[in-house]
Image 1: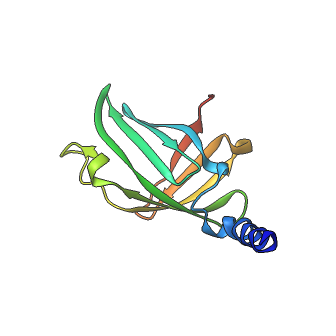
Image 2 (image 1 turned 90 degrees about the vertical axis):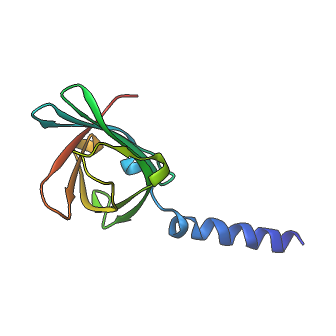
Length: 131
């Protein structure tokens, strides 16, 4: 019986990285200043959940939350697929409807800079905030 429990635990531990949707490399509180009074504050949790708040000229214009999937190429680059949860997402008409977004990411400056390149183009640079 103990042997069966041991092998079951070994099996689960061995496959945990495959099952995991994300990891600690991108987890944290990130802020991006997009210029012209536009700010994004984003919290990424290692369990595959994220939330963000968009502010323009001091006014909150969007709040989104949902799940994300991380596909690492190496320790510093990969792809993030953000899937908003409609029940936890509130955006203004000017902001537009929330939709699934696929971004290529790069970590730089010792993990303190998260550079996101959406499939639609452009670059957003998020700076990690101290805890």
